[in-house]
Length: 202
Image 1 (tube, helix red, strand yellow):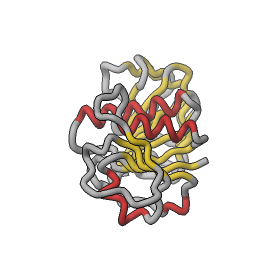
Image 2 (image 1 turned 180 degrees about the vertical axis):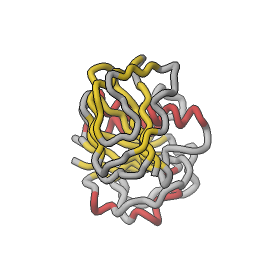
Image 3 (image 1 turned 120 degrees about the vertical axis):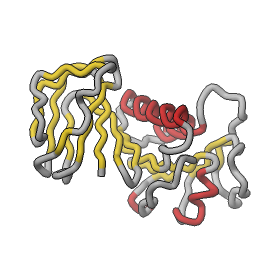
């Protein structure tokens, strides 16, 4: 089941055609920005502290209180996982406050721990969390960066990257994994330790 989540970050990417998605969710103030673009919203999640418009009649809403342990985006992701979403695109998750951006990166961790593939998408980059073997397609010429999500990442080997990564150990206090280049359309990465960020710069 494929899901689309629109958050309240910068409008740094055109939103995709919702017909590609089974379940479309908007979080809080993202509703004001996306309501006239999407054409279909299945669920609105939030404490409504960032919203200016009134939700349309009949829209399903998960209304939260401002004093809560989870962000609006996190509740949205939890709800989507409970609905059976296994492949999730998250838009407008970057820009603005850095703490919100780090929180949105953590959403990817929650997804992968639940068996859901997820990515943050903007006009500039796509950010995913991978584990073990990972494949990228249609990426020739793009810049690929790898960072540990856990404390370390051990890459056994890779194919399709300009700079070698054989038996490469990356830790969360080095930046050695930045700015590799895809020299083939298809890139393959094999690792045996740690979850890791894969950042594809467009």
